[in-house]
Amino acid sequence: MTKITVAKGDGIGPEIMDATLDILMAAGAQIEIEEIEVGEKVYLAGNTSGIDKTSWDVIRRNKIFLKAPITTPQGGGYKSLNVTTRKFLGLYSNVRPCMSLHPFVKTKHPIMDIVIVRENEEDLYAGIEHQQTDEVVQCLKLISRPGCEKIIRFAFEYALQYGRKKVTCFTKDNIMKQTDGLFHQVFDEIAREYPAIENEHWIIDIGAAKMADTPEAFDVIVMPNLYGDVLSDIAAQITGSVGLAGSANIGEECAMFEAIHGSAPRRAGQNSANPSGLLQGAVMMLTHIGQTAVAEKIQNAWLKTIEDGIHTDDIFKNGISKFKVGTKEFAKAVISNLGYKPSNLKTVNYSKNPALNLPKYKRRPAAKKELVGVDVFVHWNGTDPQELASAIRKIEKPGLNLTMITNRGIKVYPDGFKETFCTDHWRCRFKHADGLQVLKSDIVDLLAKAVDENIDTIKTENLYLFDGKSGYSLAQGQ
Ligand code: NAD
Image (cartoon, rainbow, N blue to C red):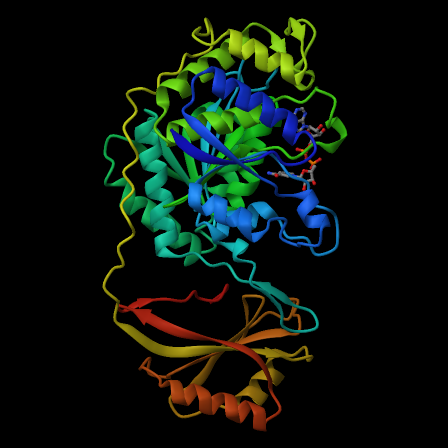
């Protein structure tokens, strides 16, 4: 018996959760339920995170959380409970299977069966943002080696567990050579440990286009957070309906399972919502806690119900569907199909799935780190980079010389183009003229001189070599 935390959520949440739990219990799931209240009521009672401390205690104690969608009230500084839960509980992996159910659910892609594995904790979603000048705001994109190793290993382990043949990586490392470059590099390293699984890398733009056009070319796709957020919605939508997909958020200790859709407030209380998305989340939960036989029984019964043409309003199509049913009746139909298998859709068989092997991240020995310069960002309202360079040269020190100025990443000094549009946000790169190491105290002196010269410095980034390899990007045009 596994104790799980359940939140029935808002809008259609209670109806689809009741339907899902009825199916789980009828199938013989060995679960004990502890219910908590999160979402709209908690938000409106004045708690901007939508969850109180006692509920956190329950979630952390039980470790497995089945959550119905919740409504985030508009305005008023309410924080997304999903994002908070993923980050607080270290749920680094978001898994979203997207499978079409052709010919029983209308879809443009009859043979689509992909799983998006999205990194869930870092990237631009660290939410570290600053306004730096009148004209420029910044969002910090953080990609870490542990973050990459954990999610990429998870993708390969998932592929092994579910007998999948290929893992594809999507990044934009032709542009972001450090951040996406690290993700791609770690992908190549980890792929070598799984020789039985095919691996490939696509640049995200053409990869996304290919996925939307020819999804049958893909199997498991792993990617950083932002790309995964966007592409997993597209993938779910093109299977036929967002109402059919579930998602798992998995961490080293805890895991949360849900539908991918929201609380559909306009459908609430009408017994018309499709419980399939949450049920798919619950099936993933059962495999995660080792109840694979029950998971398999439910999944096959669900596939058979869809195949029988017993459809809720969102997927009902004349000529394809046979019976339009409500949420409760759909759940009853799945229950009466328990023990049966689909005839046309692919029967699932989870019983021989190996367990995931996810060792704890091991920190590598520190690299030799050499400080070789600094980028000083300056707020300046002029337009001629030569003029800025003359002002900046006044703060140079022996061993710390101005080597270039860029504006939004484009080199504008030396040898810039007069056509390049410039904002009030300038990066001035200082390095040792002979490429030697520089001292932190030299950088402090440089900044002190900038104060004396009335140069408005807004931030600095140190330039390092790690084991002799450049830890910073060149300018565009350099
Ligand atoms: P939504 O997913 O709730 O609804 C989008 C459309 O899909 C609507 O037409 C809705 O009727 C339909 N739909 C969604 N689920 C369905 C189902 N199971 N059966 C039948 N039809 C279904 O998205 P939204 O309208 O943008 O958001 C509504 C609320 O949900 C917002 O407050 C939002 O913040 C919240 N939300 C919560 C989650 C979550 O808790 N995981 C996710 C997304 C949105």
